[in-house]
Image 1 (cartoon, rainbow, N blue to C red):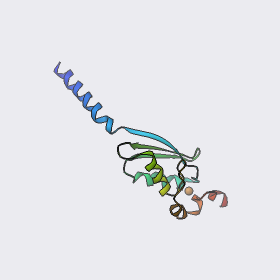
Image 2 (spheres, rainbow, N blue to C red):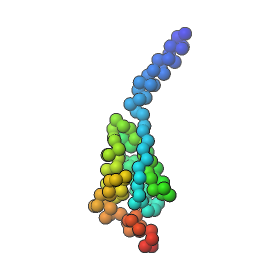
Image 3 (cartoon, rainbow, N blue to C red):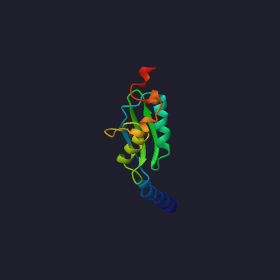
Image 4 (cartoon, rainbow, N blue to C red):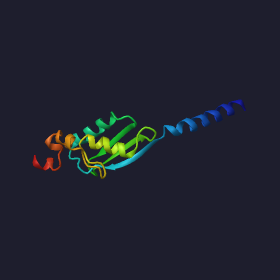
Length: 114
Ligand SMILES: [Cu+2]
């Protein structure tokens, strides 16, 4: 019985403390990505953003899947972070300054010019 109690309290603790840390997943449209370097730029850039626990860029479908902690960051801030890396995120256009610093291959249509 005592053992059951321990297991039961552990479960309750896991539920109580687990909730706040729950990672949400969101799929963000990133239509301006061009190549593997864009993929690296975004994945490595987002790795440095507090509250984001992981991201995966799918070049074929041009979407970025992001796992994040909703206590620390929200969708708008994630879109802003991607914009600040030089890429459009959903309806948010790329930050102009960041976009200008991208290598030619990462700019829109860049892969066709090579
Ligand atoms: Cu690129």
